[in-house]
Image (cartoon, rainbow, N blue to C red; front, top):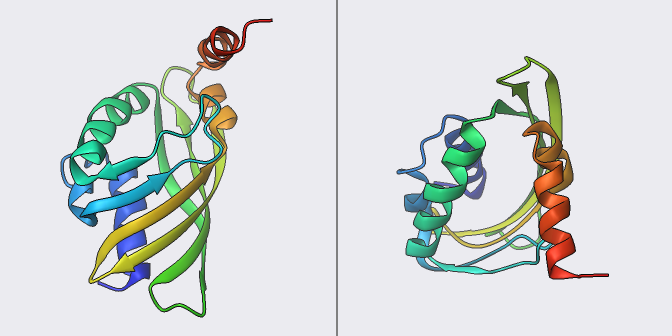
Length: 147
């Protein structure tokens, strides 16, 4: 698979809640980071760590929202393994039917059809808002940095 095909399978797999298949898009040893994560970036460095991540985070998100990747723009770089993908997760809140949009930028390095490195820039505040979890986010941040 090309980097573009791998990216498209990834974001569609997230939207389709295909959490068991997603880790297979990554190499055994990988470097996935979420630099804008409000609680701090904890790198995911193995396929097994990603399996655990998708197994825990995926179902929690799936309980509250439904979404699809939208407005996808993929940019080529000088390095044939690396792409920059801009997109939105556009969806609805299950409980209320309210529409939401979460902007994202992923920088992926794909080798032999597998993701070996990724920087996932997601608007975590917008996702927390859509999931009705802003209070949980704020509480966790306050516990990390007490005034």
